[in-house]
Amino acid sequence: MALLDPHSFADASHPFATHVSLTFYLDFATSTILGSALLTLPSPHMGPLTLDTRSLSNLSALDPLSLSPLPFSLSPSNPDPVLGQSLTVSLSSHSSLLLTFSTTPASSALQWLSPAQTSSRSHPFVFTQCQSIHARSIFPCQDTPAARIRFSAKLNLPRPLSAVMAAAHLARRDPAPGEAGPACPDALWCAQDRVVEEFAMNQPIPPYLFAFAAGDIGFRDVGPRTRVYAEGGTAMLDAAAREFAGTEEMIRVGEALFGPYEWERFDLLVLPPSFPYGGMENPRMVFLTPTVIKGDASGAQVVAHELAHSWTGNLITNKTNEDFWLNEGFTTYAERRIVEMVQGEERAALNTGIGWRGLNEEMERFKDNMEFTKLKPKLAGIDPDDVYSQVPYEKGFQFLWRIERQIGRPAFDEFLKKYISTFKFQSIDTETFLEFLKANVPGIENQIDLKLWVEGTGIPPDAMEPVSTIYTKIVSLAKDFNAGRMPREDEVADWHGQEWELYLENVPKAVEASQVAALDARYRLAESRDWEVKVAFLQLAISSGCKEYFGEVEKTLKQVGRMKYLRPLYTALVQGTGRDEEKMLAKRIFAEAHDGYHPIAQGVVESILSKHS
Image (cartoon, rainbow, N blue to C red; front, side, top):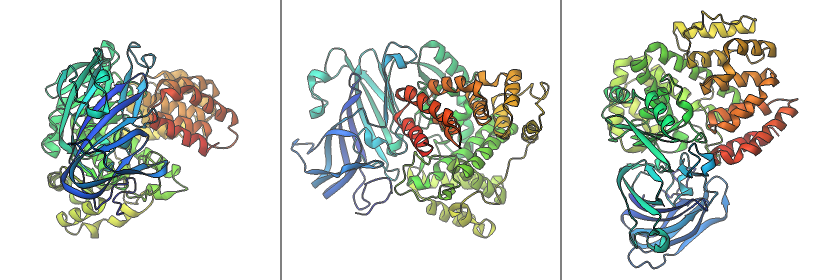
């Protein structure tokens, strides 16, 4: 077996499916999907075809024409905790195969919310999160970013609900007898209270970008290519529409920098607070946490990041998770270029400064396993979710920024456009990028130590802290705090969330509890509407032993499921010696908040608590 990806059972000698036609019956009562997947191959194939699965049941493989069974096997018998099981089907010159299956409540890509867990409190909700390797828990597939696939989908759901998907919406209609085939009986599929929503994605995407959501979803148009969708009624929609009103301008800036926008629509879905990421760049339908709606349009920076993925990540994709920096380093660079043009150089420098601080903190986090500070780490046997970090984002950004400084921005811009046009709709590895770089920037390997940047641990000596007046001033004020000097009100009068976030992240962690309380008494940071500010302050409060804020920590951890907030707060509670009270608090909060977190977030918090138990 020739594996091409340490996180997939897919065999390099087997053909990649080119299209999958899906039927999904969404059963909210049991938190499961009855599904079928018609996989189309590029040509007739004789012999085994291996797919990835995890937490699926009632699997069968059929000849699509005769519906006669095809031989298949699942291995290993005890599923691998990271990879799941391989599904190997024996084909006899088949150019397609039909799979039927059910998801289970353990399917890690899916979060099912009861009405009580939604904003409207009147209807249930379900959404997907397939990155990094969770698509296999929805349907059997070659779950590697090396594979790119087109798809069509029929989603059958209760009539009061609606569905959105990272695909073109074709129709909302009554169910038709027989269209689910053997996956779902007509008595269920065609029940009076059911409706079918049809979608198609005609551009090839990696499986981790497969995405849908279903629930009580409304929408607002905010531009010629952008509609904001949300669960939670008119107040949430209005707030989202205001926050993201400048999206079309960002799309036009992105096109000027990186070439045509290839995905037709750039719609946004604001998910319930349990969504585990800030945003997910699903093509045509970006998924967002409600925590990015801050009321001052600064949440648009997350949208800028997801928009940038339309070129770097979605058009050109990392071949494996070991090449993740090709997605995220490029996208962080592209995001900051967009922010610079739309919001100005100082705002982009603040963004870079926060990233620089985050990169340095990751060096501390991984000090006992510096492999994970490499741009291209070895991840065989490692769950990508467990080592998710700012390294591919910020070290990747620093690498590209270093190249830009070496050859100049005009030359680097031309290189970027050529890179995107050369590799669009392809999945590539780091070695392919480096060869392209050396071919198009002759002698670059003599000017920059490419091997050190890609294979070396830590932060290379030619990485650079951002240079800007406001950045320098904020970092200086943060250092003054350790000497007991609080910033004056005239010094912070024009600060927004990012300025406070940068300040708090640069305040030394070993400060007196009384200083932290005094800072909050003056500036009410624990009550901030900006989640980045609130969480940065609460981290400081925990590390300084300010126990009067533990109630606010608990409230925060029960309100949101974004891992950017869960990871540092739970870690701050349990890290270090002599923290028995804090560890007990963390375990109790998690036990009570567990069911409200997405399965990916549950796993991350469990690993933090077990590491420090």
